[in-house]
Image (tube, rainbow, N blue to C red; front, side):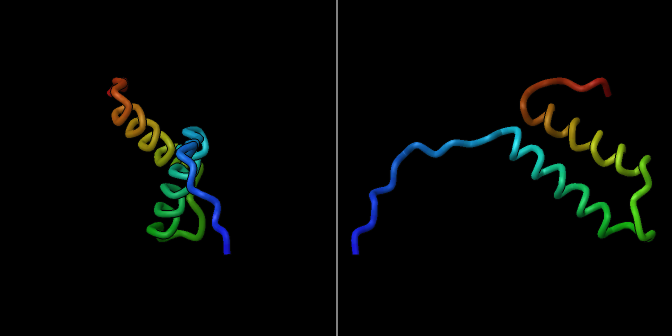
Length: 64
């Protein structure tokens, strides 16, 4: 069997990775919620916290 050699051309799609992380944050919030659905205000809160964390990790300051 012939296996192609690994190439060092890995590409990271930073937008896709950020969207996946946002989805994960929403899933965690939904699983921790007592109600059946997250309210629009709770969704906004989760996304705002995720945005602030992203900006802090990338060296940008937030308004808080």
